[in-house]
Amino acid sequence: MIEISSNFDGGNIIVKQAEWPNDLRLAIRRDNNSHFYQWFYFRLTGAQKTNTRLVIEGVNESAYPEGWENYRAVASYDRQTWFRVPTEYDGTSLIISHRPEADVVWYAYFAPYSMERHADLIAHANSHPETRVRSLGHSIDGQDIDLVEIGNASEGARKVWIIARQHPGETMAEWWMEGCLDRLLDGDDPVTRTLLEKARFYIVPNMNPDGSRRGHLRTNAAGVNLNRAWSDPSEETSPEVFWVRKAMHRIGVDFHLDVHGDEALPYNFIAGFEGVPSVTEAQLALLERYKTALRAASPDFQTEHGYPVDAPGSSDLRKCTDYVAETFGCLAMTLEMPFKDNANAPDPVHGWSPQRCRHLARACLDALHTVIDDLR
Image: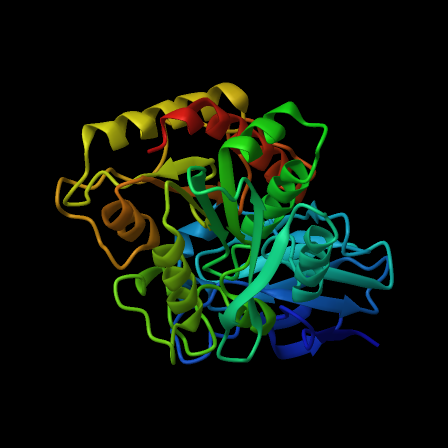
């Protein structure tokens, strides 16, 4: 008997009809108290060695319908290795065609990153003698907002803030965090040693634990898009931003990176802060130096494709990068990674993958190494 389920950490699907094997009609559940939907993650049982057609209906009205063009879903038998499967977008529905090789197979929009894995990541960081791990506060659902600190704690050290997963469905951001923390915790790495001598790192691996557990695409438990809450966060409806921003103001910021994923563009790129009112030539010069260094460090990064640059004075200070750049006068950036694949270096089996996210994180630290001495 065939069965489709999503009642697990990060799961999201609605079963509309399940007549095995070729009339499996599904839909994606919207974020709570929100119109956003695009993230899916579900388990199919009982279709081993059977050509199966899964139709996810209504995706043309999802948050980013352009994200379905040339997109392929990911699948896994063990939730460790994720591979791409044949997927078609017909203008209204997403059609996944697959012949599972095992009794149980999981399908998702991108390789999931569960809150249980997040707990393991925090425990791994906590086991390192040089780190400090603490909770800045609690989410609406009562989960910890974890902060990992490592590096030089003296007053003159640069203050480096890296946050990820404001949008919970952008799971590649926390896979990136694994690579970042793994390298920072490697005491034999000469780049790491230099960075930790010169800077104190403040790392928030998951800004949106509630949305992550609930299987949301873009919002927290209250339906708030956290990346539109930075100018005036609420302890009641956006506590994740409220507590992180409060810590930033107490500690200070000299460098900031906000890690995301983009549904439509099949590239890795950086969005800057060019439109903030007080932007300086020094900030812009550092931004260009960082991007140039990252392009040299990783063939997976490019600067040709990305978002349009904001006109002077047109920035949205509700957004994290713009708010931080304007408030602290520092180098602040948003890193975007694809849900699809890197069109400049495609991988036909895995597409853009957790492993490549982790490698890009290491390259981002190489790029930081080139500008660290010039951070104010």
